[in-house]
View 1 (cartoon, helix red, strand yellow):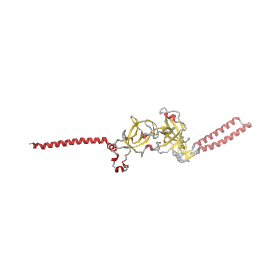
View 2: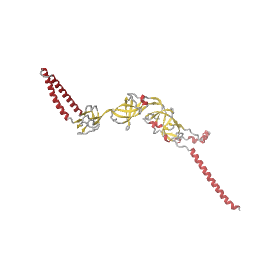
View 3: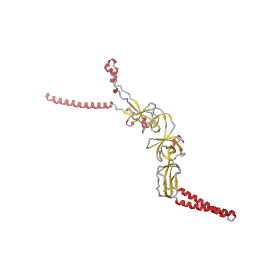
View 4: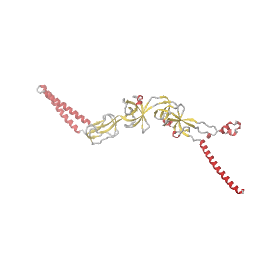
Length: 406
């Protein structure tokens, strides 16, 4: 009877043991997984850095300007006529007074010849009237009439000469002509534009600055300009400052002169203008890439050395007497590959930025000398995370930033 119940009891015990083992195994596995992720060390992210040092900084006022020629006009005709001759080609450099357009002036020339012939007759009539008046056989009024007729004809000749000269278009100054806007044989009405004439030897740049910066600029102050399609810069100086501030925009118009010896500057170009301000000492600056803006303010990431946690097993080994170490182990040289890469911990530091100039930003509060600041890679970083320094490509090393390589 007892043997009948032994087998079911054994089976029941096996089922209970198996179920308990499965439950314990799942609990043990979850605990180990949690412990693994809790103690797992995150890989260090590589970042580029810059070591903060106070130095000399040259601030600039940046503006957007437009380039134009120091002398530039669109030449137009003053009188109507048919184009007879175009004595220039596009992009030709012409001297002052050079002929650029000749309208048909045959009628004016004929009128001048006829007027000069009549003027000769009037002069003879005047001489005869004066002679007769001197002899007492001619009236004084005849002399006056002849003199008036002579003066009127001379004035008519001068007018015809001026009209004929208006049909010859001349260059008002030395410069480069553009593409002709007219064709030979074309009829032109007064005011028709013929060609553009630009003096490209010296250019001017017109730009605006805020009224807050008005007290920092003055006549003859040095500027540099750069174009959007090239890395070349050009030096110039301020020649005029508008005395009136625009009440709508609160901007002040400024004009500068720039030499254009190589002829690369052209009227109408877009230019980035930098007005050079006096140098300042002991200024803390950072690359603008190091500054992160948020709703709570501007901050940077500063590197702090990672605190090394001592392994208890290694500590116990270190506590052993020196004579217990094996001579063979002591004789082994250190393995270079065993040296670990130096790691740092990130600290988030809120700062107060000041003026900006080029690739630099002035920091007035929040940093000190010797701070190692992250200049790139902040988008994947968090405060307290581990990083390693990798300055192979570093924005702080660029020449335009004006910062020394750290």
